[in-house]
Image (cartoon, rainbow, N blue to C red):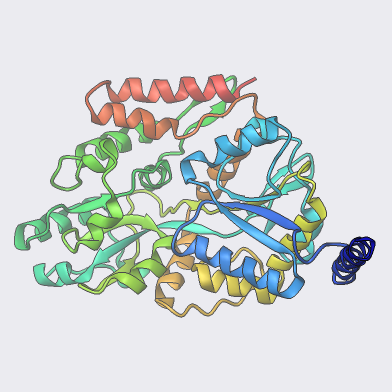
Length: 414
C-alpha cells in the first residue's frame, strides 16, 4: 500500500515538472486560455478564428474566440466589467462609459507596427482602441439587370451619377425588367449618414451647448423617406428588419447600398448573376462613411500581458496581411500589402471612394464613437430609431430632427 502511494506521488510530481518545463515565458502551454470576444460571421469571424489558431500553434497559448451576438456585445462586456471579470480581448464597434479606465493603453504596440492611429480612439493621450480593420460604405449593382434594361452605369470618376440620375436609372430598370425594387439600403445609421453627407448634410454636431444640424439634413431625410415607397426601396428593410443583403442576392434588386465587408461574400457566393462595385451617386459632395472594428484589451482580466503579446503578434506585418486577406479587410497598418484573391478591382474602387471622400466621413465617426466611451452616458442609433418612426408615419420629419438633437444634447453636452 505504501509503495502504491509513493508511486502515485512520484508520478504526480513528474507530471507537474513536465508541465513547468514545457511552459513558454512562464505561461502554461495547456490550460492558459485567453478569451477573445468576437461577433462572429462567416468571413471576418472566421479570419480571426484562423489567426487565433495559428497563434496557438506558434506559441502554445490558446486564444479562445468567444462568439457573442453583435447586438449583445457592448451590454455583455459592460456587465462583465461591472462584476470585475472582463474578458481579455474583444473586437468591438462601439463602447459604453463603464469601459472608460478599464481599457489597456496600446500606444506602443500600435507605433511599433505602423498602425494608423488616426483611425483609433485615444483618451488622455492613450490609444485605448486601435483600429483592427477599415470599412467604407459603397454601392453594388446587378449588372445583368442594368444590361437587360439598356442602362449604363459609371465606370470612371468622370461619369458618376447624381442621386436624381441614379434614381431615374432605377425607374427605367423597374419598367423594363422583372426587378422587384429599385434598390435596397442596409437598416443602418452608418449607411443613412452616407446618404445625408452626399446631399450636403454635416450630420448632427455640437454648437454651443446643444446639438444641431444644417438645413441640408432635413432635405435629405425627406428624400430618404420619399424613396421608401415600396417601389424604389422596400420600406420593410427599415421598418420590419427585412434582410437587404438577401434581397440583393436574390437577383431581383438592381442596386444595394452596403459596404466593403460584403465583397468577399459576394465574390464567393453570388453565382446566378453578375455584380460589380460602382461609384456611389452624390448631389453635393462625394462622401463615403468610414467604419470598421476596434481591437481592445481589458485591465483586470488577469491576462493583460498575454493579451498584449497576442495583439502585438496580430499587427505584425506578415500576420496582419494574412488577416486582411482572409477577412477581406481594407488594412489599417501603413505598410500592409494585401493581395486580394477575390474581386481585387472592388477594393481598388473602395480605396478611391475613401481618398475622394469629404473629410466628414471619418471625423463624425470617431467623434461620436469616442463620446460613447468618455461621456456620462451613450446613445446608439438614435437617428436610425427616430427615422423609423417617421417612416411609420408616427412623427413628422421636423419632430424626428428635434428628437435626435435633444437626445444627443442630453447624452453628450455636460
